[in-house]
Amino acid sequence: MKAFRFSLEPVLELRRQAGERAALDLAVVCRKRIDLERERDLADARMEELRADVRERRAAGAAAWEEWGFRGAILRQEEAITECDKNLDRLREEERTAREALSKARVAWKALERLKARRKDRFMQEWERGEEREIQEIAGRAAARRTSPAFEEDLEPLMQKS
View 1 (tube, rainbow, N blue to C red):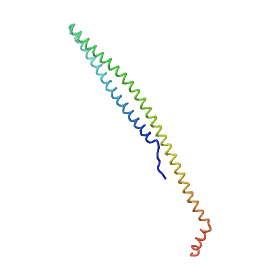
View 2: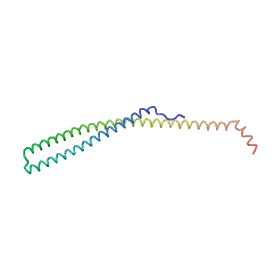
View 3: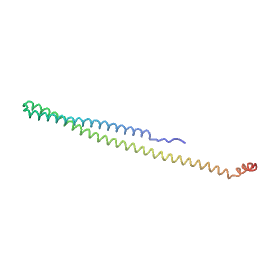
View 4: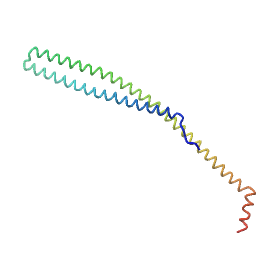
């Protein structure tokens, strides 16, 4: 009997690879988002430090030129935070898109996996039916030989020896 062969195996392999690529793409985007979230947290912490410095300097009677320096630093930090927020929004959208791509790739991959399993089950059932037919055919030949007159003639010399 010939072995099971799934004719769509190359397509299945391509779908599997597409799923793996989609998972890697999602991992890369998630890593970028996590790094940017850490950067955003650090920017918030720097902003709090700046504001604490401003409060201390004001309490100590800071000069006007120092006020302007603090304002500039705070504005730059606010711009950095705003830029982080924009990039986070973009990365979250990329992550959502990557998750959708991964989901679609897995659906296509799993559909072919199920098709392969069904075809293999059908192949095995047909093989088992063929085996059963062969066994029945052999049993039928043996039964036919036992009931034939030639079989009885073959048994006659054996019966006389006893």
